[in-house]
Image (cartoon, rainbow, N blue to C red):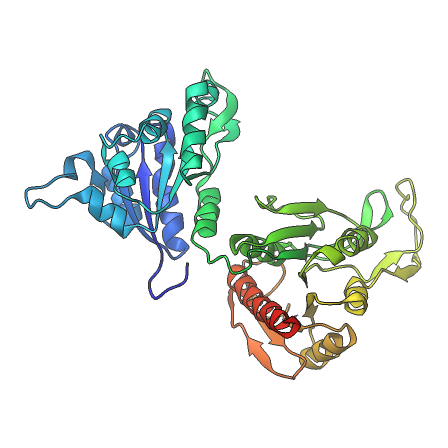
Length: 407
């Protein structure tokens, strides 16, 4: 959410063992830059403590006991007006039922009835309760009123007799992703974008390959940022250990040729492409069908070039915005400018892999953004998510400019 102040998130814990995770959610939200406040039902405080919530939130916790005080202030009205988003985590079956009935008999439902602008529920209950027809009817009714849900997820449940099932509350990190989505400006709504991410692997035999240390984090940050800003996102990903982003169409590939096919086959349906993948430049001329035995002495391997995906996209470009990445250890600006020109890009992002904090696998990055005019913008060392948002803002400017030209 843009503006002079950070977005405000009110987190409400209702009864359930998952309330033990609520302090961790509050901490993650503060780390993400949000202002947070917490409130808790009496049953939630059987599983977590008021002190734990207050320390994590950095402020006093709103409880049933603090609802009405002698000075006549109405806490439910104040909280509803303060919050940009209300997150109910964990959300019990009983809290869903009371909210769907339109009641205002406790602090949570009173805040909702008082006009909390947006509500995000993170349910936690056993699978039978989640699948009970009344619970599903309540969920459908709340969705119909514009309220949203994150989870529940399949996983281990609290009771030793339950084992695993669909009913586990989403992890705090996942809930933060959904909060970010709800509080982001949707300036890419109506656009379809494609992002490539991660390395490729070019195999000598079934177990040996050429690759690089790319983690895919930059590409995944780009995909998540575009999703949060309202775009339809296609993510073409090489092998990574990253969790698949929700709300994103993810196409998994291994080899450069597979990535080439996946991207070029979708090129005509997208408005913008950001190529953040570290595609191998070479592949073995031959790939053995069985693991090659170790041999004494030097071995010679013939290598052939892989498809230059970005160059092909540049040749085929019509109205798309096309962005590339360059990773150089020497003569970075000169080489990046040449790549920008040769591949017909709208701009290029130059990485510095040997600089501290900008290497493969980290959560931060530092890029120099270079334009055909010769102008440059430095991101400084910031999170990969911040770099991603900067890139999409520049892409948005170019999409808007081309629409004006067409009119």
